[in-house]
Length: 110
Length: 110
Image (cartoon, rainbow over all chains, first blue to last red; front, side, top):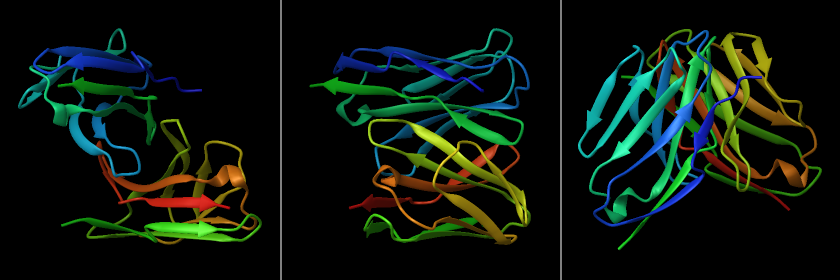
C-alpha cells in the first residue's frame, strides 16, 4: 500500500504570519510530486509539479521544496492572507497513478 | 488544447438505484484516466485508473465499477447504490506528470 502522509492535519495561522507543512512519500519508484490547493467539492487547483531532487519552486507567496532521497516535500506560505484558507494536498506520482495525502487544512485568522 | 468534461455536476439518488457518471476528454489521445472520490471528512481516494481501452485497475474494493469503452471516455457505475457511496467524485486524465481534473460530481444517496 502506497502511503502519502501530510502533517499537520490542520493549522490555524494569524494573518500575516508565515507557515509551512510537510508531505512524506515513498522514496522508491518516484516520478513526480504534486501540490494542490483544494476547496471541498471543487476541482483541485494545481500549484506545483516537482520532479527533481532538490527542486525548489515558487508561485507568488507560496513555495515548495523536494527531497526525493528521503521522501519529503515542504510547502511554505509567506505572509498568509485570508484567501489562503483551503486544504493543501500533496500527491505522489509513481507507477502510472497519482496518490493523494489526506491534506493539511489551513485556516487564516484575520 | 485538452479539456475534460464530467457530468452531471450534482446527483441525488435513492439507495438501491443504479449509477452512471461519465467523463470524456478532448484534445488528446490515449490518456491515462482516473476516478477519485472524496468521502465526507476524508481526502481524495483513488478508485480506478485506466491506461487504455478496456483496461481497468481497481484500487479499493467497493460497490462501484468502471469501464472505458472508448479511448477518451471513462464511466463510473454501480448497479445498486449504498448510502456510503455518497461523496464527491472527480475524474482526471494524465499525460506524463501533468494531471487535469474534471469539475466533479457531488453524489448524495438518500
